[in-house]
Image (cartoon, rainbow, N blue to C red; front, top):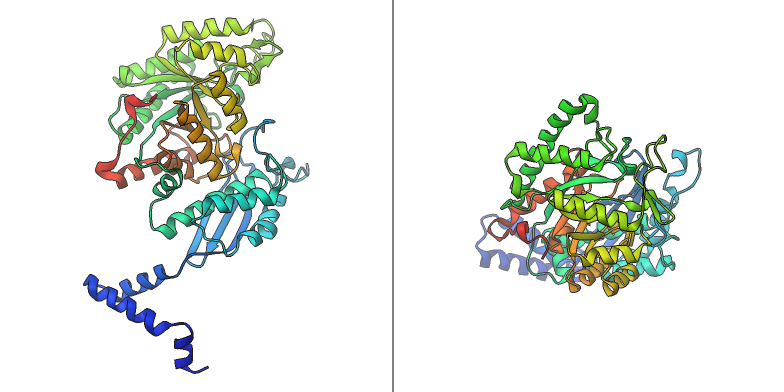
Length: 473
């Protein structure tokens, strides 16, 4: 093939001429760079390969990482992991070989990506997020994504979302906003974990976490400062009260003083807030995770204290009375999972009292059917979205739409097993979520999310809107 034949076959002469003319019209100071970018844009992006590997999450437990290749670049994503999988959420695929990572390796999920998902997605346009996600859902054929593995599907879905943003030459949060139909970016209120308990920590505190919301700040940057300062004041308060050993941290960075009383923990946090001087600008939230200590119809608040377990059983009504007293005595504005995941009646009644935001985590598990029931029965008033519980970006967008249509709050949430991937930060802004729960202002995998939100706020400049006092709207 001659040079002229080659030029004619690929229409190079015409394409180069078009690029040169565009450079002249733009009066660019760097025509070579301009022409290069112009011709790159003229070629549509397609997925060329999807390659996966096993990495470790923040707990040292295996998870899936994906490199999605297009003809224009490489886009990486990883899947977070919860402490356990509920019956209503998408299922991670693990190998189960006890001699390897105690059964937690994800080689089968990696193989499914490399040998099945990659083949199915090659040639697809990465901007077509819903089509990509649907191909994987159809390929899996199960309701809970157990065939290919929700961890495999999610990592690919996120990587494709990043590739789609790059092809459109927009920020990831802007691409997500476009996919979801959101027109106004919103910086969420960070929900910082300060004290960890439950299965997140080795102390005797039954409830899972005590958190703060800096709703009185004017910007996300200021909210992060408030959270960090409160965290460090709390460290000093705990050291004074329990000694340095009380400042060990749980899996999401919260301090783990050896307390068993929720009030003791709330008093510590209140004292720390008082030292910051922010006072009314910071509110408190508690994540109860009551399913962990529910036995039949009773709740054992001493389940982590062997010599006391069983002596402090509380009924559902007792729990309601306790929450009412706590909300009266402390600036508690949000309670997550106040009852067992199947205890619909008590959570419905408690929500009807209007005392605080009632967040459905274990109750609904980001499951559309559970969310629909909770909306109909008015069983809670805020969605805790854990993306790996549902499995794809497209499905996450849909359940957030359901929650917003019901006038619910939306909390984008971390998982116990996190990675340094900051995707949920962009997701929270793109979906205009009112809150993001990414752990303590401590530990790299948690701070990766908060630091990304700082970058987004800086990028948005005058267009940046921090939710602040409107966090429940």
